[in-house]
Length: 276
Image 1 (cartoon, rainbow, N blue to C red):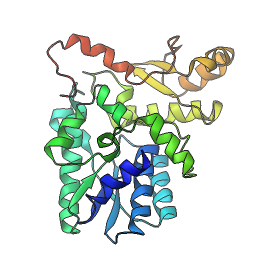
Image 2 (image 1 turned 135 degrees about the vertical axis):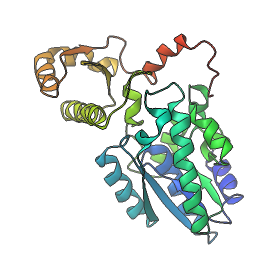
Image 3 (image 1 turned 90 degrees about the vertical axis):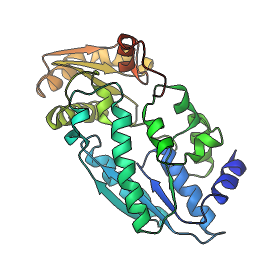
Image 4 (image 1 turned 120 degrees about the horizontal axis):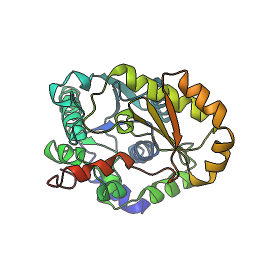
C-alpha cells in the first residue's frame, strides 16, 4: 500500500502540488508522504487550509501546527460559503456547491504559485458514501491519491501509525454543516453553537469521536456504543451544559455514532444520484 501511494505521487508531483490540507489523518498522511518524496524529487509543495464557518479555530491551529512540524509551506484560504445563495437552505447537494467554490479558488491560488496539481485527502471509503462534493473534485481536476490507490480509512490509520504520525488515532472531524438537517438554513451562530457543544462533549470524553446533531432546539448526541452507559450516568451534567448553549431538549442517540446519520433524510429525494 505504501509503495502504491509513493508510485502514484511520484508520477504526479513533478509540476508542484497544491494540497487541500485539513490537518485530519487523511490529509496529514498525504502531506507526510509528499514530504518524504521531496527527499527524492525536488518539487514545490504548499498546504492550503480552507478557513470557513464550517471549520473550528482548533482545526485551523491544528493544521498550521502539523504543517509547521512537517516543514511545509502553509497558506490559509479564507472564504464564507454561507454567502453563496445556493447554500441558503442547506440543500442535499450542499457539499458539491461548497467544494466547487473552494477548489475553484484553490485552483486560482495554485496557478498563481505555479503549482500544476491539486490534491486532497479523499480515501476509498469516502467513495462508498453519499459525497456530492466528489463530483466537484472531478470537474475541477483534483486528484485524490488515497482513493486512487484504494486506501481505506483503516489503511490510512495503519500507515500513519507505522510512520509514527501523531494524527494516527485522531478522530475524524467532518465540516460542521454535517450536524444539521438538509433544508434547514445554516447560520454562523448555529454552527458555532454546534461547535461549542462538541467542545463540551470532548472535555467529558477526551480523545473519543462524537457528533452533536442539531434539530432546531434539540441536541442529539452520537457517541461510540461503549460510551452510551457512561453518558447516561452523566445525563444531568451534559443536559445542563447544553441547555446553557440554548438547546431546549437533549437526547442520547441509542444507535451510537455513525457517519452521515443526517443522510437518512435523503430518502425524501428519491431521484438524487449517489455522489451527485
